Length: 496
Image (cartoon, rainbow, N blue to C red; front, side, top):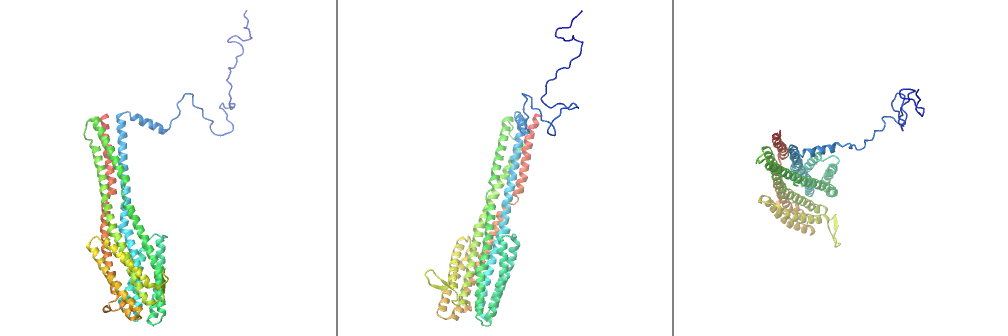
């Protein structure tokens, strides 16, 4: 007879089975369907922490670096990296060259076809307005004997100013300061014409009111219209200078990239020679030739373009600006000379020494000083006989003008008004100052035409030196990149 073991435990295989012990859980109890239940939140529960000792998850960048590092340990991998770098450098060189030269070519085109012609148009507006004012005062002095030539000159100047204002308005940006100035001039021009017509009508009937209307018209021109026209001229000159500043700088970024690309290609070919004893890799040699061609084309083309633009500015724009200023000074001087006889001392100016002088005669002296200085500078800028000859003729005419004006002023101051009038607007046998003014104005016009042609030729040469460079550089860069890739590909084929 057997007895159970001590402690009351049942023998194996007999008695009531016992449940195995389950480790205590700290989380929530399981749900009735057997899956763990979570409280207070929706969605999946917290992710399990990585097992102790497991490697952390790596980023795509780190994995890519590891692959690149692993590829660099083999010769085929190194060759692929070299080929990619060479192609990237060459393409970047072509892209930067095309971008920089496109900008410079566009700026040079603006110089030739946009900003300089607009600057010349603005100067023509000023000249036409000043000349119209001069012709109006000359006609007024002639009274009922105003010549048909003087009347036609006035009308032609007014038509020219109106046409140039329309051209400038079409070329200006809406809302810009230039557009606002042009709009103001368009409003003032009919007002000025109305005042001139009233002055003429009263003058033909012998009414003194005609002189007042003419002085009012002259004040409108001198104090409102001409300053606005001068502002427009200066604004267009600023645009012209900005276009020159954009067109002339060397494309240093493209040149630097070109040198780097050539250096990289030379290094790659030397490496290839040291490892294989092959002197020539046709693909990389073609890439080097293409890059060298682009770099030489870029350097030489821009150097010639810069030289042409410099010449167009030094012997074109600078001379044109000086000659325009001289012509404007001569027109203003002629107008003030006429108005001296019209006002007959009605307008005076107090000088620093407290003496008074006729306002228009004082302005005439200031304008003649500006004309003298302008002609001296223009003579120094003239680089050939065709440009210097009309400037010398204008200078000679100005000197005679000064002498005849002094004689007219002496006659007027002595009370001989008719003699003074004859010395200003009289017939040729009276040796009037009007003849001298015509000599100055005519020769300044000849000099302006010559310098304008000089500008066009030099600027066109500068623009032509850039022709085709942006597109050509891009095409050659693509061919160079293809050559570099093919050259590397030929070396890779030896490992297959």
